[in-house]
Image 1 (cartoon, helix red, strand yellow):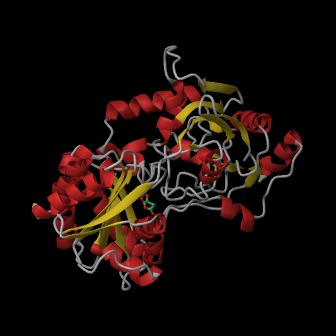
Image 2 (image 1 turned 180 degrees about the vertical axis):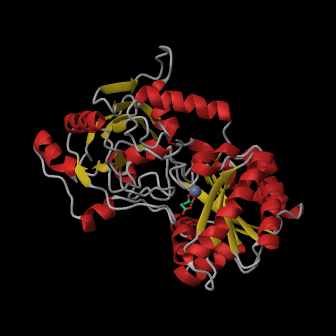
Image 3 (image 1 turned 30 degrees about the vertical axis):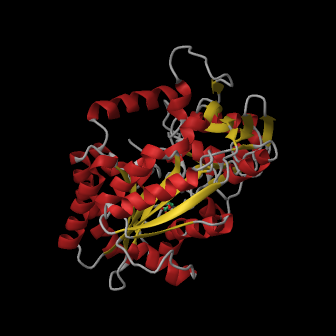
Length: 460
Ligand code: S2G
Ligand code: ZN
């Protein structure tokens, strides 16, 4: 607490120091990730204020944790009693919307969905759609390179960022990237900050790439018995349709959502898995093409049953079967793995993981869902009633080691879209080489020589 009074005088503002309040700014949504109430919280209002605060903290080697909305799932925004948390919640202005160039300049605290809503009137959209989009900030989305449901067509956050204003730990303010699409001028520093989870600098503004608003679309949910055949269905549909999304979820996931959210099943037949796909009405006859593909997949025995939305409200209801899974599972304090493997290897990988869990953790209920179109699987292990949180967590840590070894075998990633933060740090070596890690440490030293920016996260 000693630095607090001096920093308040230095900035001319009051900091939040009440632990009951600072504790709510000291963690994100990650289950099982450690944290303790930060020494103080600065509700930053300007870049200049952030610059002064970082220079102050750098001189005194005070750890700084940047916070958007705290929607992260890996503990990347978790703080401790020595830290200053700098919250961007007050820096939430859309500075400029440039329709001619399909760009927006925003402060980091702007909520993802607020930008999308604001640009709709110009016939544009902000496309990256993480599940948390109605409350996560664009600064946080950029810092974690957030994914979402439509990445199969529109890519992840990094594909929609043109430039960033970043405050370095020295207090220097830099603008990396450019509003122009082309500016080949040596190293691309901007992409270093995207996904760096606040470890290289503090993102306070972004120039965001917008797009033409998507056309009206249809949603199909298809019942599939065999996971490998979901991949066949994906290959078949994506060859002929420009899919906006290709998601999947298991029967267990559907059971939870139907019984706890009151949604209705998409059709009577129960199948082991369900594929949810979406496509825009980009040409006449596209619905006939989709139906022909559906029949083809049925003829081949890949699809057992299916439904196609007949209205936008039905499309929304079908999406809820997938979108509501994550929130529904929270009551079982799930241990989450967010992994990615090449689509052609997914079926074998999933089989190996199922085998592993069945043999070694028979008490565990495993719920599979995710973004198959991106090769991204979400494996949620539900805490059995009989287990205490600590017992369950210590068992799950072993599962993650074994899943990490499988990912190394399948050349997959221990984190697909939820970032590394605290929770995935110990498994990073299954997906990144020792040489890469050394290079990352050199880059970290160059940007943050006093190691104040989100220390202990991602890598040491
Ligand atoms: C999803 C949402 C976050 C979670 O539903 O695709 O990324 O809880 C997830 O896994
Ligand atoms: Zn996801």
